[in-house]
Image (cartoon, rainbow, N blue to C red; front, side, top):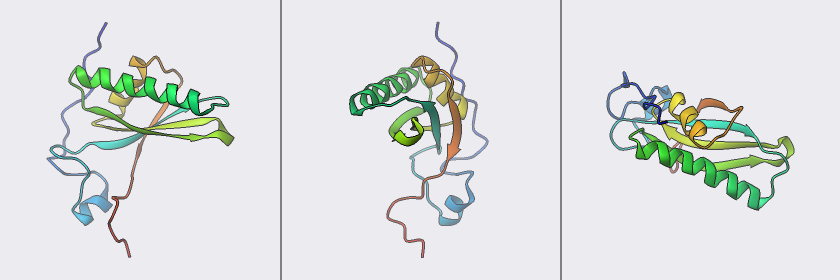
Length: 126
């Protein structure tokens, strides 16, 4: 059974980030209403390249399924930390709840979702 999109109307206007550094620089990563990056953290024991690929495909499919239902959520990439047996999936979404719902769609359990900040590429910070 499909769950209604967990996104609420953003109090921020178009192209307005809630992160001060982006407001100061006058930049944003998306077109239209800005989306925030989120990290979804999950335990992934002793994964090899094939297991990581499969887990990433499942995470991507969950986001794509939710996006097809009209939610603004997109899987960007994965970062695996073998020493900690932890995988971080990086998403762009309107809310942490949208990312949690994408994880539910992908049948991922025991996840942690937090907002993240990635400095824009190609900007000289000196």
